[in-house]
Length: 358
Image (tube, rainbow, N blue to C red):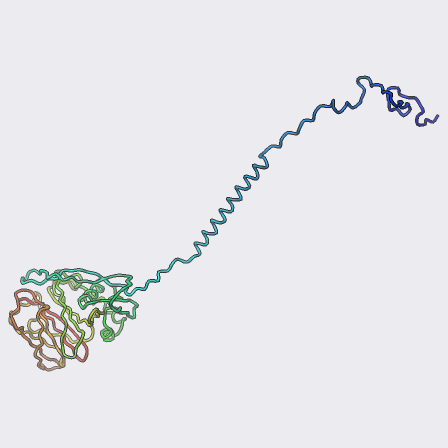
């Protein structure tokens, strides 16, 4: 038998059974007995439990940390930028112009006495200056082929700088202090370097001579201008021997300079007849007549210390030489003296000196 909807056995416990008759309007349906499956009213259900908060920092904390890290990153970038920019900038350049590179300063008390055994001072400052930068000067600097610039403002200073630079092995400064006429006569810088060791044992030894007296005399000859002669007298050690001796250096210059030495222009030596060269120095009469032999045709001037200037009588002596003789107008004082001979021959100049006792 075929069942149709609404037919067949009905389940009296199922209010929605297909075969049951729906209640009439206004009827109250029967309440199902306890234990029946039926959803409870909404207001009788328990409240939902909220989900637990997520573990870890809150979003606000995360944003705060992100902001701090971002600020630090910006500061680091700015620091690196300015640091590298400062490294790329060139150092400031000192544009000050120097007029001298080297000058040396030495102060030394110089002396003359009436005793042959010791030398006392008339105290005269020897000045030799050494500076690397000078922005003001009243003296024109002398620049040489070595590039060294040297200024000497007196004949005495030029001679002292020259022997000091030779003594210390400063070949560039020593060459810069030589006048062009002497540089040409010597044959140039290479020739100067070739004799530098010999100069160190000769003129250079006077830088450390002790006791030592320095005389500076202006030469006064007809037709000769701006010429001086500087004489060193004292006890000097040369080539292992210590002797009482004297040496002279011609110097050219005027006013505030520059002054330059002229030691290489003539190779003809002076022959000292009276007083002769000797060690210890020869004894000479206080009113004696000086006598020296020089190249023929020379113009000569003699100096005793820095107090007596003599224009000698000249006489040909044969063999291309001439004899020069002169006597002081008044007797010399007792003690150690230096006789300096300077001659000019065909524009070249030469000077030598000898120590003697009265």
